[in-house]
Length: 127
Image 1 (cartoon, rainbow, N blue to C red):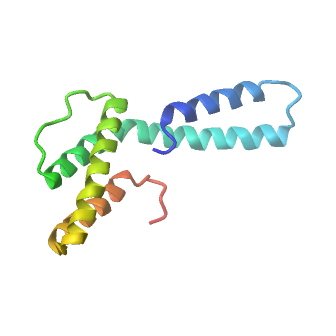
Image 2 (cartoon, rainbow, N blue to C red):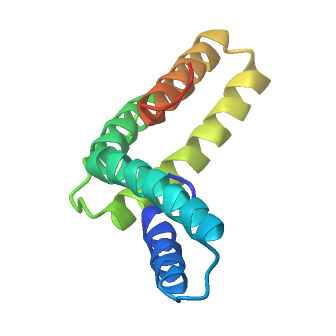
């Protein structure tokens, strides 16, 4: 999720504290609480599946890059750092495939990017 879950939760906590003040207008409080509720629901969905998404994605990109290994550290921060590294390498591999005219490799990379988008799609996504 971008932004990541921890800063979103911190912002929501601050919003809740601000709305505890008695001088907040009822319409503003209702709007803030509605937004807070929606974002907490999305954060819960992302939190529940984020590790699985990153492990699957890291595995798929490693296969495309011809790398071996697995994610030993399953903390989200570690998985995301490895995902960032792998995505940077995938960009380089795509540029090399494009320069070489290797359309099969390009197609495989694009297929993974499409799959990655599908993995990350929220349940509330319109399509």
